[in-house]
Length: 174
Image (cartoon, rainbow, N blue to C red):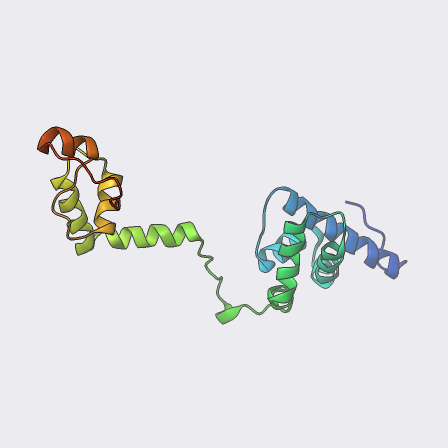
């Protein structure tokens, strides 16, 4: 990308660089990426050099104030400013000078499911499900959650066929 010479027209160079950094940020956002503030700064500096560090905050503020940007992208940019992560990235401060690991809901779910898989509760659930092989595992799990002491359960049709019994009309279902 051709930029004006910094020595001949400093104001024009500065404004052009801000616009260029804005375009780089827009490209990232249009690719459905939401990088951390440090990643955003790193990407801009890789493309435009050290000068991007001085212009990225202005570019983010301009884009956040823009009416052309969808609300979710504006909120992302505003978040970078409000939580001071962009300022920390610009200054070069990162908590404990280590990369932060971003835990998503999926990461948490996987970690908890791995821990649950090795627990006594999981073994009890499997034993419970083994008692009721005629039913789907998910249905067994729902019964177990609703009534852990359940020793037997059956459908209304099964109650009629196996035991000759009917379910009371206003009975509370599980």
